[in-house]
Length: 252
Image (cartoon, one colour):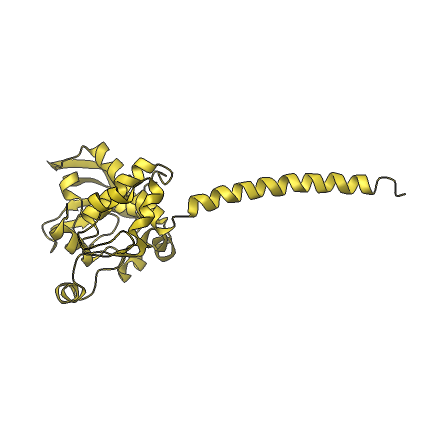
């Protein structure tokens, strides 16, 4: 279940300070699946399998996964390491001292990455993550053997390459505002993955939805409550207006 090698390599670049530089690559809109319990459950499984080996989510506890419809037994049997308890934070399996020795720094925590990205780069966090995980391509000139259109020269190889396979971007050079730029026209599948392109896009959408939900589990409840508050205020305004009119109608 644990993707040790790929997971550890993720320490090289997902949410480093270099994100502040941003990207001019157009971001794809991430599907909004934060109300889809099945999608969030599968996203949690993908997060544990492909991210948690090296990246912690230390501000989030396993037992909060019951809020997306999982029982504590399902969490223990399918989403936890043997030494963890249901009430524990989601900590990475890697030893912090070893991580610092191997990579020069500890892998960044991913609990709030779906929210912090919007503040750092000006993009929607979910849109950025959704685009990032779908624009990897093989580049043997890079140290890791991978590059990314949304984050050129990224230091992290594709963590989901087994699912996606290997692709090559089809780029076309066009002139824009007097300058030649390369525009993405499509992808060429070099080596198939275990998922079809459509299945892979759905898997990424579910992973990103889970990371978005994990960053703010109470967001949907807060939005629903806000809608009811606005409705109440609207009704109360009408009632107050009519009451005021009735109170002063006989005053000349």
